[in-house]
Image (cartoon, rainbow, N blue to C red):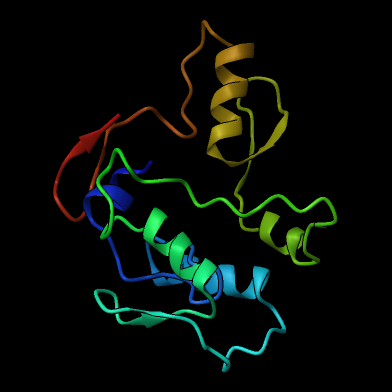
Length: 150
């Protein structure tokens, strides 16, 4: 689990499926991808009094209770995980989502990679004796509490 999700819980929860998000941006993107075209007005499920959110169903409310940092300790928290659907297909918006990842060219060999994680993995595996300048290994500080991470 991410530090921000556990230590600084937010009120951003999807009222359709109960998933929890760090911020409004994540919730908005989720709604566009997962619930695109759904009738967002019809909410007949239970209400979470602590978060002041009415859910579409009992299942969504139960999911919210499992994944929200406001309702569970760090040890009890479950990851956002939807029931497995064999007929699920990736949304049409997937290419647009991939465009959000910054493409980076490896400074040593010129291979183009998507995102910091892929760049880090590639660089450690293929250039272990070199120092990188892109996505440097500097420390990062949490903007809300000041805790420093590597």
